[in-house]
Image 1 (cartoon, each protein chain N blue to C red):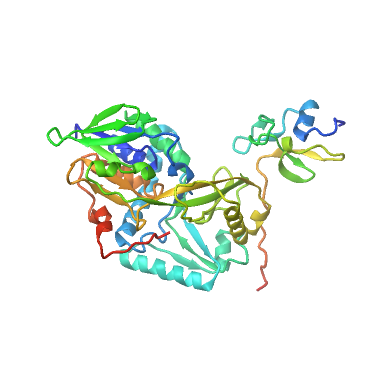
Image 2: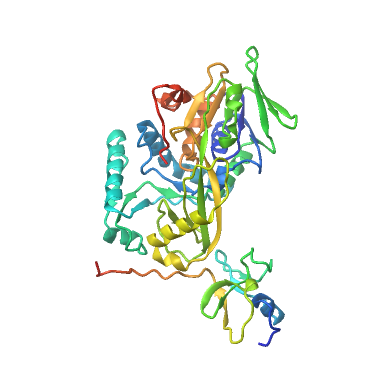
Length: 378
Length: 85
């Protein structure tokens, strides 16, 4: 058991899961969270626990996602037992729906390629007649779809709450309103000093940067490279409705409370998390084309949220060579990967285990290769 | 009931003594208006057959039929086009 103090910068889904994972194994953990001024992707996402189509450009990521979704039921149950907070996991499969034969073929090819490269990532292509047995309300514009048996969804707000409640139960220290501006590493004492804008500071043996879009240039202070970019996703929320959608699709899902969430756009607009009438209309039209009965549902709100993205959209998990004990963790699937962040990354970055196998794939050095070019998987 | 022209449905119902507008969706608990400005969604009632209307945002009209809203409204799901190509 390590005596090290671990400090995690960032109290969103990624930081809280890693911190919880270390704390549950006995590590002394402190979280420093920026607070309401942060971009807070943890509150704006679509709540999917999704394996399908992940990692088409990086088999190691497909494998990581596959392992993560397998661990999810354990995280859900553990947090429920520990804190009485139900993250609401429903993991009985999910659908992608297509509107053209060309789209369907492309989808089938992608899913077959991933399953071939990694193994044990099953999928099933379905015609409308079969889809209707699961999703009775799909409209005539839907020409087919794919089903992923390991896909599902949760309530991301309850997940975040459950993780924070779990951190409290495990004795972790959570500090809010901490806007971190400087990190220092002392080569002799091997200790980190973390400084906030208001002058507060903390010392730590280990450090994880999990601040999403708030990472700014902090990574560079401790010898880490973390290029981060963003796209905006707008989503719509309907009034609460009696249950009619038994399975999530990646663009429309009905929450446990009854609201239907409709998403999402992918826009290059910088750090603008607003909404636009044209995209709201576009999302609404697509949702009604998918499930015509939604034409009678009332929209309650729309929001925009910013995705933390690396240049190739795959995660960065890396330890610092010049400042041992410092790590960076950035991804945009903080919901899907939550259990792996807790059970695997937490113990690693907390100093209890070695890095997971073949994790070099997630080093940010890959972005420094002058011969490589990148595009988002989104 | 007879009410002043121009007031909203929620105000009319409250003035008439109604205190139970709907049953809540998750707990089936009796609810009544709270914010009276369209953001709390507690004042939902069925008006003229349309469910879950925010009554604090709707002016009264002669002949309105108002019913309690029981839980969430239902979207009818029909399989349009079955048997057709």
